[in-house]
Image 1 (cartoon, rainbow, N blue to C red):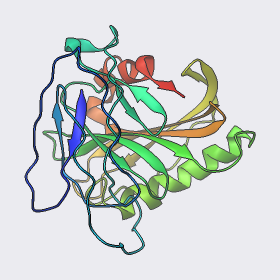
Image 2: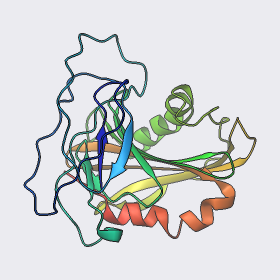
Image 3: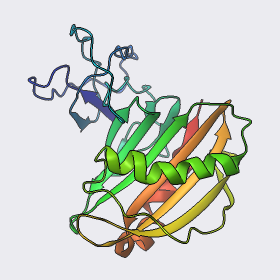
Length: 239
């Protein structure tokens, strides 16, 4: 699945199609942050670069154009869906979830799903700055702070989350063929008051530090934890 951004806020999303045998397209220019709307299509080509002038300093999680995904068709993706390739990470997008890309404060591939409960589930994969030799415990502490600062302040989750309490001790977790750490907590969606389950995964791979933040309503967590989350993790590769 390729997600194609619009080149201006006044232009409606455009869907383009090509055969699966078509040659790879070149990535769209990502030098400037710009507001985009993203819609899923099976195949597509990158739009022309915007000619807009200089932009102001972007706010946290300022939306940027999504580079054209690699034209691969892994057998592990369901429904003959192409894997997306964003910021050095490749994975399959679960049906019903939407993908957006952000450049600030970290390069992030963000999957979201608006639930019937009125809440939003997220699966955010971020490539962090800094040395890949930093202790995972330090990266985990940073990630726990980011949960309420980056996620809430940028309205990725409408209304944000309350401060989680009683994080579980970090334990070993394998993902992308490397060993990382995972920690979980229970919190609350501030907008609806519903209970939310949070999971944070940190790991080092491809000479980079990585962070995954997962949030979903507690009542949906058990189902997602045996279907959606393993599906993303199983198909995830870093480069």
